[in-house]
Length: 177
Image 1 (cartoon, rainbow, N blue to C red):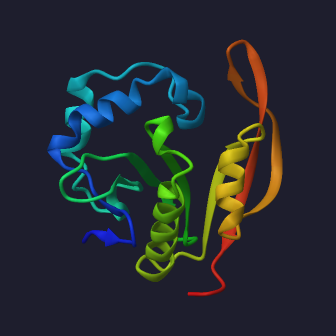
Image 2: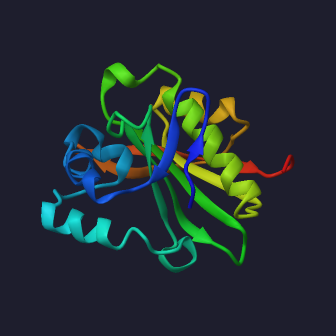
């Protein structure tokens, strides 16, 4: 896959030198709630994952990309297509920007726009969906900005810090590409 470039950022395939970045993201307990992670990952497991990251989305059913500002800077976040379903032409979308100071800088917005275009134009997907905690106002605003609509709420869906929380499902149907 070639690099997908926007005005201020680009998204690219994961590289072996992303090991420490992916390791840090996967082990950041503050984002486990949004990443659906339950246990820490070892560097060994992350290294194995990166060694297999070359798999085609049709084989892996997932595509994880690094969000970067330019060639000289490391990744700022990750954006994923997951549960890729080529029969029904759909996939889930997830995004995380690692550091708070990089959030609200339009980085996630630009990355999501690039990924939507790639998914609809290159993968010919009919729809994308996102699972978002109902309390996550930033993510709800980001996805609705691109036309995702909330189509339902899964009650008591996630168990976080001893409390059940609701999760909304947002959907975007491809009507433009």
